[in-house]
Image (cartoon, rainbow, N blue to C red):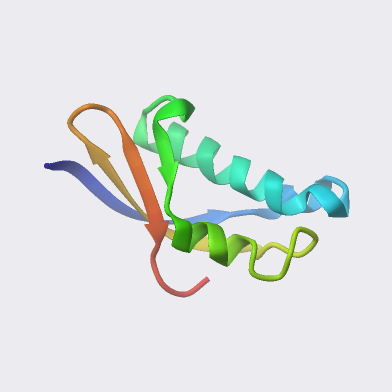
Length: 88
């Protein structure tokens, strides 16, 4: 049973500060850090859905989106699942 459900627009600007060949990896890390901070859960318990992964990697490793909308659900056991929530 879901304890808490929220929709966030996560900025991925910091992904542009790393080398081009590492940007999508950094964007995934930014999503996990953001959700960990805002949902108050450890990063190890933040799970990213395949739909969100495909949106971030859609243009390859060098061109992730600048922001992404995410629907995050925190469960009673402390785990957080994130999925893509529509437009970027």
